[in-house]
Image 1 (cartoon, rainbow, N blue to C red):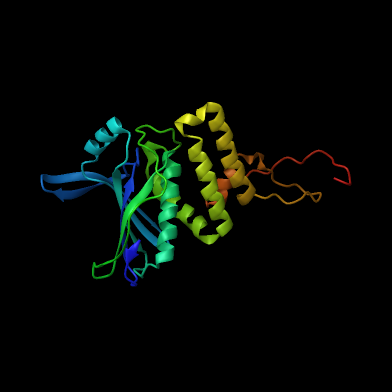
Image 2: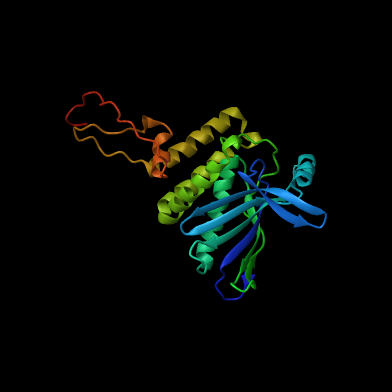
Length: 254
């Protein structure tokens, strides 16, 4: 990262190797050859306003990536504070990592922000960052839980993820580790059995941090048998946790 000591008010960045995200709307942009429509998604959740778009000419970039299985910018993002205020460098770096992790989790393959430019209110470049975190070689059809028919859910989930990422260091570390194991389980050389073990490790890591049942005190308690519902509920999902059945009788020394 290089730049001068001045607080920016807008970030503009490239994102590498996002395979399937197209947005829930289109946006017209003027190019030298005429007007082009690109996929677009606007996300707003305190304190951020984030605009994700496909890069113009993405179909040609994807064709090259399908042949080379290499790396290239596929999307762009613009980020502002919702209140229009300045962006501290440290919070910008946390946000960029969170965006990397979230997009990688939704795509099932490592994506990463590349070149980042921070602009002041008068559009001067305050600082720049070159390079990226770990990004996987291009995979046109990764195994992912993300639903292409309901891409708007990305805009609903991202603010919840960012809020959790920002509010607690323990939860941030758990998300970082769980997503790492989740992505590692999707690598082609993990094989089916290895992938299952790594995915289980990822979910157990989240369970340990987001859901810690209290010791039994003679009252009904919830258990981790609720499946994926309990971590979703901690992120703000409307999923309703169901009461668990009472465990079998225990000795007084248990």
